[in-house]
Every structure is written in C-alpha cells, then in structure tokens.
Image 1 (cartoon, rainbow, N blue to C red):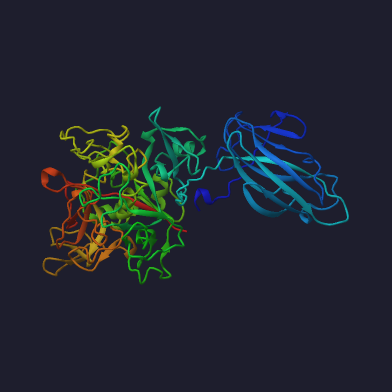
Image 2 (image 1 turned 90 degrees about the horizontal axis):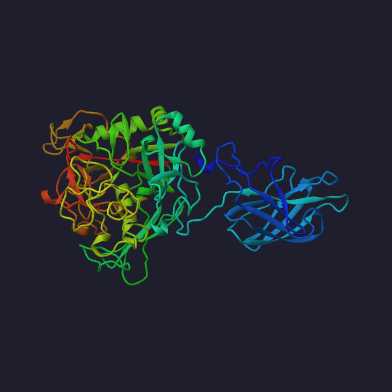
Length: 589
C-alpha cells in the first residue's frame, strides 16, 4: 500500500489552549495549531490560517429547514477544510437516521448521513481570502427532535497539478522532496500536486530514500519543509507519469524559442497524460495541425507480454499509473547501490551483474533494510522502453524542450563529459569546448541544463557520462562469444554455441527484439530508437549492427560517438570501464 493509499486522518485535535475567535454574529474562526496524525503527517502550519463559517442557524440545525452558509478563509495561508455536523445531546432522533443534502458553489450536490462519528459532509480548498457558499438541508423522521451544529475541521491545502499527470505512487519508505533554491537544500514535501510537482512547468516529482534506519524514521516523522541532508540520501527517483504520445510532421512540432524541427533539431512530441485504464493504439504519427493517432507505450505495462500489442491485454499483465526512474547513474557499490549527485558511477561490470545486484539489494529484506522500501513494488535494471518513456517526456512541452529558459540548440540536454564518470555533472551549453569544465547538477541553467527538464527536477546523466546498459536483448543471445557476453545463459551470436551462466530473467524484465539488427522495422514503439523515426535525433550516434544488447546515452565527440538521450549503441554485455546502468521502480497495484 502506498502512503497516499492510506486514508489519512487530517482532523485537528484542538487542545483547550486553542483560542476561539468570534468575529461578528454567527461567525466562528478556529486558530490553527500544529497537529500530527498517526502517520506523522503535518496537517497545518501553526497560527497562520483561519477558516470560518458565516451564517444564521449553524448551531441549531434542524430537520426540514434549508440553511445557507459561507465558508471563508480569513487567514494568510491557503487551507483545506472538511465540514461535519455534531449532533446535540438533546436530540431524540439518531444521527444515523438523518440525511444531509448539501450543495456548494465549487462542488456538485452530494448527500450524506449525519452519522454519530461526525463523518465528513463535504471537503474543499480555499486560498487565503477565498470563500465558498454552501446550502444544507436536513431530512429524516417527522417525529422526534434532531439538533446539530455545523463545524469545520482542517486539512492540508491540496493544490492540483493542472497537467493531468497521475499522482506519483509512493512506495512505503520513499519520501517526497522539493528543492529550496535559496538554501541549496532538498526539503521534505507534502504530497500535493502543484506543491510537490507541476509537470506543466517541467517540475517532475522527486522522491528519496534514506539508508540509516534511525535517520529514516526521523525524516518520516518530521514536519513538511524539513531539510534533508543530502549525505543521508542514498537514492533519488523521478516519477514518469503514464502518457500516450504522437509525433507529427516527421520531426515533431515547434515550440516557441525552438529551432525549426529537423533531424538535427527535432521538435516536440505531443503527449497527453492518461490513467491506467487508457491504452491508445494509434500509429504514434500524424500529419497536419491536429494531434491524433496517440499510442500508449508498453513502458507503462508490467508483464511478460506487454511489448506486443496483440498480447498486451493478457491477464498476467498489469497496467501502471507511471514508473520511477533513478535520477542519476548507479553509484556506490553493487551491494549498496546509490543514485545521488557528485558520485563516481559504477562501471566495468557484466550486464547480468548490474541486473542481479539491483534485484537482490533493492527488493525484499535488503530493500527494506537498505532503503526502507516495503510493499508491492519491483526495483529492476532499466529497460530500453523505460529509457524511451523518459526520452519522449523530455522531448515534450513537459520536459526540457518545453522549458522557456532555453532556446535554439540549447534545448538539447547538455552533456556530462566528466572523466572519471561523476554523476549529475554538466559541460554546460553545446558551445562549451573545454571538456574540463564540469558544472554541478544544482547550478541553474548551466548545470540543470543537463537534466531532462532543464531544471533540478529532471533526470541526469542521460547525455554523455557512461554509456548505460539497458535491458533490451536480441533473440535471447547472451553475448558475442565466450569472452564477451552478459553472464546470462544463452546462445552466442558469433557461432551459435551456448554460454552457461545465470538464467535469463522473466520477460517482464527485458525487451526482446526479434532480429539481431535493431532498426526502424523491428524496434518497439516508444523505445526512442527506430520505429518512430527518432534515430539520429540531435545528431546522436546510433548503430544498426548485429549485437545482442543495447547501450544508451553515452559516447563522446572524441570517439566519434555523439552522445545524447537518443544515443544508441549495440553492446555485447561484457564488462567495460565506460559502461554503467541505472534502476527503475514500479509500484504494482
């Protein structure tokens, strides 16, 4: 169960010392005090918000009468609220036999029982100075007496993300964070869209895990806004909400400030966020000015047969609200995997070593002890289609391509040219020729330009850095020969002999391609390689060659392999000093 799936009790327990202010006839305002619920979530800030109910009869509600009230926020901060009716002790009619019909200027009509436990009648959000008009009518037995008092309880203000992006699914142990630029620190966030994330403004949702269990508990119980020391964090993850995409006019459409779309300066993907019940099956291409033919990529499906449109709806497959992707390349050690900035990338490992290390150390009991993760989730080595999901979102109005702080060639993700490979670094603008200039991930524009959003909320190391091995395989080949292979048992592509290693994982963990040469005709829709025409975007290197595995994002100009998020190279799966990887995480309903 995710944190947001737990029904959070946001009631304010008002102690006797709380001041009750009476402002005019029939207006009651309650001064907020800080209250922590059983899940240790702060519901309000102290002494800064006031919600009032204005209108006659709020302390003497009776059956058969209609009442109109104004709920008003006269505080200085935005606030949520709940309305309920408290049954007077003089009533002879049980609250469970009374029905309340309630309408609101901001909500549709609803009906609820006035139950003895003071259940919620209606909830709302009011910015400072805003008000809401509600109408209440009680009905029930005609004999006997019912009297009630209309009261307010307080909630955290829930600001919605207007993009329509699905709310991130936090696995227990993950802590939502936002960045405080003025103090250069990450802080614990509320889980409100628009506070935690705002995809319309390229603010993708971020979450962290804490290795030390004692510190983890402290942060989980801490107030919203508490700074989180970056040395206490062992992983950053970024939420990619489920979407459908279509690419028009060959190279995408032009956003203001961007160059004319071409293979070298591609335009935007049209993306719409969708819920997990939507599976669009269009071509992913359109001509003209109206986006159509949307396609929902298989990266948002978890199962053995998701990549084939004919079998995607098989009963064993699970449609996802979105996926979490590690913010940085793998660092730390294989038994203590990290995804943090300014760390040395793990390199020189066989592909199977990356895969098994992530599986063994980030799931189950070790996933709980090392990261605090628990529940129905799966952490795994990133798949080729998951890389594609990240790339397409970046190349949309929700990613760096849509970020108004960049124009022309600068809309491309800046390269990490660090040697040895250091996570989160940026070489600055494409015009920067000095490769020794490496800017930190949190330096505005020159540093953050190396992320998928152009700000600190995106994913780093996708352009340059180490070439990242992904779980994309051709024909279940283990490798090229007995010396250059992945470590998985399978056929060797050079002579058809077999290699004996560890077993290939379940198909849900890798994309399987039917040909040993990956090209436009046999790639998977949404994998940011061939079928959508994205090979060679931004001049990124791509190789159509017979080899069993896939590498993304790496390469340098000095080697003739131009790096970028659309970079593609074939790999044999063996250990190399210039190769690394990263992990993804899915929450499974």
